[in-house]
Length: 153
Image 1: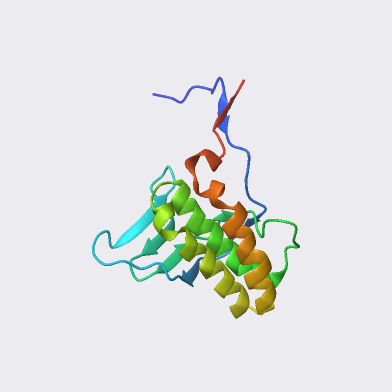
Image 2: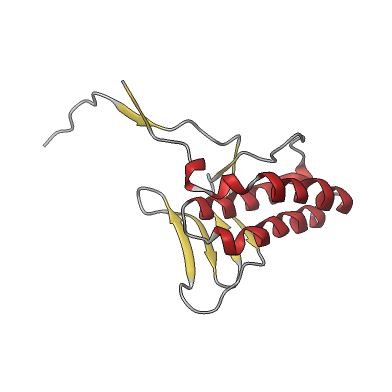
């Protein structure tokens, strides 16, 4: 059977400004005992895009996207690794793969710690960035924050 031309296309508005150009890993403070051994977010083809194992190792595949640093800030190198890791943890929460009530604070703390590791002034990471995500970012852990699939025409 041959493929018929599509009468419409399904698409989503891109939420991302940046994409990984290689696979990346982050050590998080999110750790648990027992099952599951690993949480995996897969694309429609079954390819693992983001995973988190019970020892706290976060993985993101090349091509995974991030909107970069959020808020009234500039996208600087010292902010990028943390922004990617934090966005991927929040993506797992949006997909209901990682419990947002249990792990959101740890994800926000990890962001702060990664920024300090990467050379951000600790006062800024703690008092500006960390407080900002604690006060304003909870809504981005909910499924309603996902971009809806659209169809045209």
